[in-house]
Image (cartoon, rainbow, N blue to C red; front, side, top):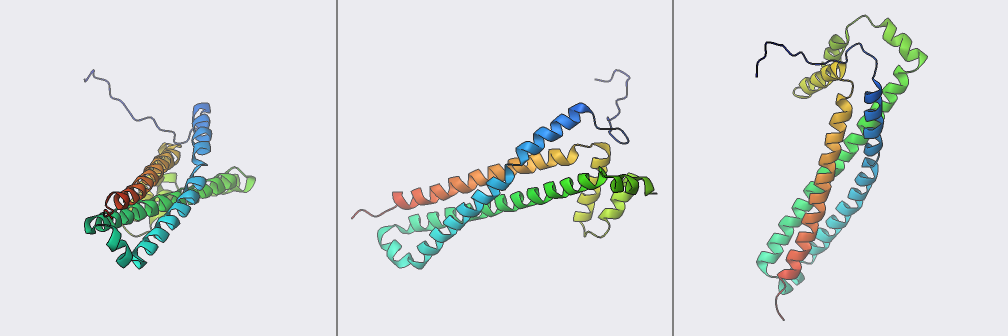
Length: 195
């Protein structure tokens, strides 16, 4: 619906953080603190599934005597999918922890006296600085870095929102990892030959 008004995007650039933004940031980051525990538990479950697969494959002749061929095939497929989704969940958790650590270090620096002096001494505009920071990265990382930097200049909570979305994906992949592992074990149990 065009009412003759032109809407412009709200921007945070050059403005102080609002109380609402501070509240959201604190809340989101407290939720994100769980990511280390999720990543650690994924390490243990991926290790467990890998051990089951190694034991399964090393005793394939014996297993084939009590489990049908299709049961062996499907359980191996499900175990492999479980390992893959678990590995993705772990990588997302590691990326989140690293990103949160970097943000904390940057905020500590920027909120210090030295950080304030550093910001006052800068001679380039924030968008230009983001473009220069992204230069050494290869494409498409350079494009992603530049876009993330530009969003961060105009939306102070953009990185926090991105980390919350990554955390959600970490949880989803962790759930898929567990469900696929259980499905692989059930597949083995269901396809056992009658004795």
